[in-house]
Amino acid sequence: MNAHKKVMFVDDEEGVRLSWNRVLSEHGFDVTTAEDGAKAIKKLRREPVDVVVSDLRMPTTDGIELLQWIHDSQPTTQFILLTGYGNEEVERRVRELGAFEYLNKPISPDMLAAVVTAASILDLQPRVPDVEVAEPIEEAEVGTRIAEEETPREARPKSGLRRTLEIVGGSSPLRSSGSSSASSFRSSASWPCSGP
Image 1 (cartoon, rainbow, N blue to C red):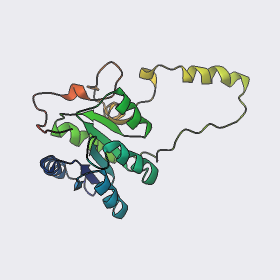
Image 2 (image 1 turned 90 degrees about the horizontal axis):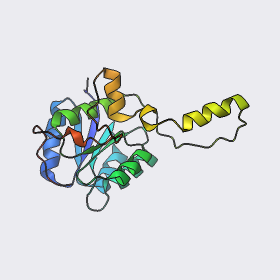
Image 3 (image 1 turned 120 degrees about the vertical axis):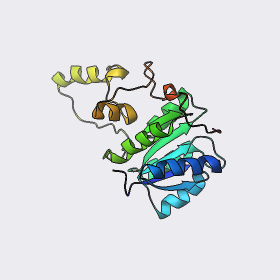
């Protein structure tokens, strides 16, 4: 299923890059790596990939700057951010830029492979920023639009892993607080990697 799907793993720690390269390759992905966001951008200009998995904190160009470049230059490329230093502000920013998923370290190899697989098989349309359209609103539509704007977060369409789990019939192991970070994936089987 993952044959011919190209994935780039970006992390400033060589051991982490080598380990995840091996894991994702064993799951059938064609994997390339980069040491930081700047080197990733250089490689992506030459050869785009289906999915980029990136660390947050790296020298020169960090994960958010890389995501911004992907958002602007290669909007059909899916992006997954891995971090040991996440917070709600970082999560909000990467969601605004269209990241497929935001995951807290540590994460198990099988879980990351599942998220990368989900990102690579969902045929998502290019991310397009919301645009205000100035069009007249019929009186009957006003109540409907207001109701849509006031829809609680839990009832809104899901993205990334939660949507994928619903599609394949799995239950979401994400925190019930409404946050989509996957810190609850931490377990004794988590991948032992250091760094941000």
